[in-house]
Structures are given as structure tokens and as C-alpha cells.
Length: 335
Ligand code: HEC
Ligand SMILES: [Cu+2]
Image (cartoon, rainbow, N blue to C red; front, side, top):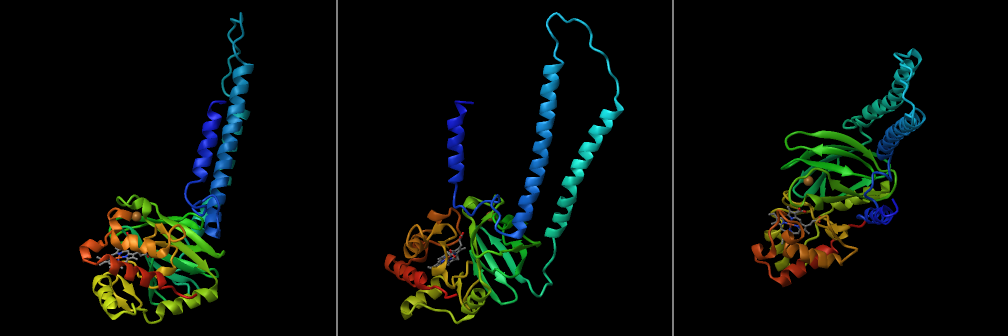
């Protein structure tokens, strides 16, 4: 044990340093995650209690009734004991009831369908290799990588995948739920606290599975309304006409800004205000413009298997990549 201690301390330090602090199901930031956490505590508590009691009895019996030196008599033979049998049948039954009643209540409670609720915000989530698309069906807007939600409403999710199976998970808020190609799953979440919560794909889906992050940003109701309005405002295109033409022909075949463009890649409206580029290059670790430049030059180097051409493929010069990066970094929404 003495020799293991430094190792254990090291491990605890290492694990606590894993990633940003918001990626923990053990630090719930909303009612759904709280319920799930309470169930975990209850079941682990009961299991722990059983283990401790059984071990104490076991060790006591081993010591108290061990064979002593020189004692060769056969112990008293016992067969059946009604009192004991009733006790060890009733105790597990009671424990299972304590565990079962809240579990069943919460499992059904958390499956509540808010898809017809006029007060809930409906969000259609589509998981792609390796990015997330969020469509707000009531507002007619779509965004990528960053889910913006108001703190005062239930968010009702309809989950699906465009290619292979993924899984939608925001550990601090609740989840997780599979997103399947060809069928939909539903779940709801609530975000009572303002803040940014990291989401993860929780189903091995390809070489960049571990990089398939997204952010859930919970904002005040007023801020959410401003965000919706800003998303619906006319797109801001590059000021330089030549650059706007390049951007349209090379990028908007897949991406969209405002009403312009395609829908096979993350919507880039307000991309400069996102916390990350590509879900994984943090804009507080390197300037947004730098991250954009790295990404646009060679997405494959950031995320193996990313379905976006490099600047070599599209024939953009480094200067053009820089100008596009500057334009996108400056493209922020006020909300
Ligand atoms: C063939 C379709 C396609 C084309 C063309 C394309 N992209 Fe992409 N782009 C994608 C896909 C797919 C992703 C998401 C990749 C991922 O995260 O795995 C992406 C991601 C991005 C992101 C990150 C978005 C975010 O929210 O973090 C930026 C920025 C971007 N592309 C800019 C550009 C620019 C600029 C061009 C033009 C030079 C361009 N893309 C051309 C498909 C494309
Ligand atoms: Cu995935």
C-alpha cells in the first residue's frame, strides 16, 4: 500500500487534469444530470453498504470460528434456520425496492416527450462524421458545432445521424442518447445555468471520433432571442468582391452563411464568435484567425478523415486563405 500511494496520487492528479472541467457527469449542472447523478449515488451507496456488511460478517466468522490448534472435534452441525433465512431474503428485497422505485420513476420521467410542447424549444440534431448540426425547427435556423439554448425553457431533441451511428452526450447536463442513421431518438434536457458545457460523441464512429466535440451554450432568454434574430439577418459576405466570389464558389457549395449556400457542412454564420474551430481548436489557446487558417489550409491535419478539402485541393493561395480566415474570424454575432 505504501508503495502504491504515490502511484494513486499521481493517477488522481492525471485524471483530474483530463480535459476542461466541464466534462464531468459527477458535477451536474442541470436537473436531468442531477437526477442521473442521484441514481448513481443511490445505487453505489446501496452496493457499498452490502459489500461492507457482507465483508464484516465474513471476516468476523473467519476469525471467530476458525479451527484452533489441537481442536479436532467436529463442530455442531446445523441445518436450516428460519429466522436467518427470512432475514436474508427480506433485506435484499427491501434494498431492491429502495433502488427500484426511484430508478423506475426517473427512467420514465426522463423519457418524457416534449416534442408537442409549445413552450419547449425543438432542436433537430444530426450527427455527421465528425461534426454536429443543430436545426431549430420552430425558428427556421440551423447552426453547427455550437448549440445555443435559453436557460428558461425545456429543450426537446430529435436525434439522428447522417452517416454512421454516433451518440449525443453533454455530461454536465445529461444524456447520453444514440443518434442512428435512418431513425430518430428523442430526449429532453434543461439548462438552468448560463455557461458553456462541452458535449461529446460517445459512440466510436471513425478515426476522429475522439475529436467530435461540440459546445452547448446556455444564455439568458433575451440573449437567445437576439441570437435568433442575428442568425436570421442577411448574411455578411466578404467585402472584397473577388474574395466573395472565391468564398462562394469554393466554400458555399458545402457551407452556408445566412440564407446563402449549402447544407452539407457546418453553418458558418457567426463562426468567428465560436469557442472553437472544427469543435476542437480552442480559440482561447490560439487566435481565432490562426486556428481558422490552420483548419482551412489542411483540415485533415486537425481531424483525420474530416470531409473538407484542403487549400491545396481547392487551389487557394495562402494569401486567399488568410483573407478568408480574417473575414470569418471577424464574423461574429451580437447576442
Ligand atoms: C466538400 C464540402 C466542403 C467544402 C467545399 C468546404 N468545407 Fe469547410 N467543412 C466541411 C465539413 C464537412 C466540415 C466539418 C468537418 C469536421 O468538423 O469534421 C467543415 C468545417 C469547416 C469549418 C469549421 C466550422 C466550425 O464551426 O468549427 C470552417 C471554418 C470551414 N469548414 C471553412 C471552410 C472554408 C473557408 C471553405 C472554402 C475555402 C470550406 N470550408 C470548404 C466541408 C466543406
Ligand atoms: Cu461520432
